[in-house]
Image 1: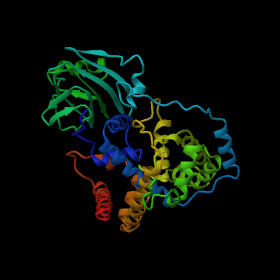
Image 2: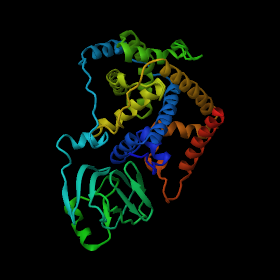
Image 3: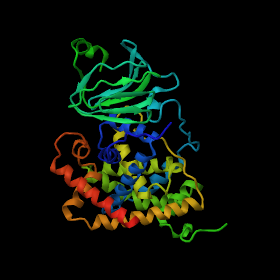
Length: 210
Length: 189
């Protein structure tokens, strides 16, 4: 895989480091960082600064038995540490997908999606766009982040290959097209339900959970 | 083996040496020292977020247990010990609130040895310069940086990078971060 060209905005990497992102954004950005050394370095830089801020805090006194409890805790820990392995999907997405693969549901016209997580802070889902096809044009009330996992797509803002991240705000009504060579699998995170512009998809929106 | 000047492990901060002893040898005495140093700071971090003292101490215990469990992942060339523990503490906050895998990138295995020690030392020196830059910020900007890293700003306040109007809060934070980055760049020349 080539190095990603489209990266996360720095303020989003900062928000990932500070734990200030809604879960779907945090999980998607973590997956991008798994694939992108540049964003990993920027995340590390924010950790360094976060550590400095932690250092500057006035320490809070602990109860007298705190350290003994901590030492007892580690003795109770199992000694074997299992290492995470990378499958088709980068961490943390791999933890959702598991051994059996994504649970795809048809969106019609060959497009499929698998909801990974949905909650009050948004949704995280995989999308499969058949080669040469488009996802129906949609707008969103909030932000939408899309990370390409395989294949590629293009829209009015550019060309996105595996590892690339697109940030779309509510002003961008976009029609991502998978390139002709291969289906495009991507993961998308929103902080609000998508709003499709064509009438029929909008009616179907509650059914598909998108 | 030829050693680069300044790459002796003894030149590293004691916190980094404790953490490497914990990672490579499971050194319990080093863990106790790390606990004494960082648990009170992690407790203070939780209290700063509004958690009462008792619950904040439980959080500090849990964060330090996570330090033990994740010890093999510590890479002193990528973040100093406090930066690494800061990230564990912030991530814990998200994980606990969700029925979902932690939002963590893939780990890169650290590679212990003299080269790592040299890279760790370089990082510590860079962090020390960044600390100077942080302390040199005007009070208002420094407060914004601290609030951001304490998680007191919403992601909208720090992360809207799109065509949405920029708020005062965001521009101040960006200015502060830009200044920090600029300082760091100057020092690297």
